[in-house]
Image (cartoon, rainbow, N blue to C red; front, side, top):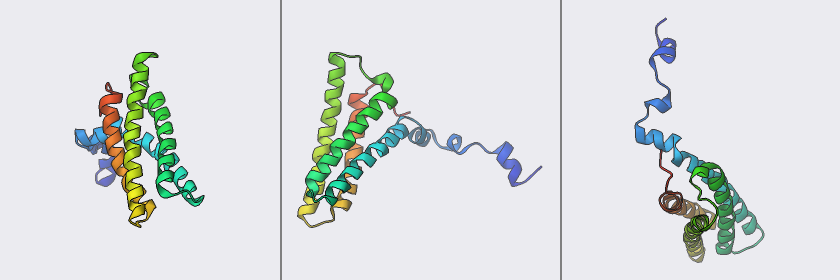
Length: 156
């Protein structure tokens, strides 16, 4: 049999095999799993943020509160599922790892609150500011966590 259908069964590799190594790593490796867990945490964060805004909480405190809810979800997902093999054993090493995770979260919280609060002070839509804050915070905290918190984890 020739033509398109035979190419699908004998001549073509699956899409993930045809990608360059770096792209495949981003889409199927640790980064993809971290991104997926971050989406779950973002759901908790954004949901809390929107509920608090609806209840009349000012944008900056609503963003900060939502971020903290998201961080709790992120720790549970990353430490129990994603990086379970990289979590330190109980004791001082584990507390240090948790402190580093909390420090990355605090940095992300400062970024988020500053971006949303600054935008609100300038009369920008806090929902759009939150989107910017999510992107900035994701990049910085994910790099911190990959490099410093779960150091044995690799992007791949």
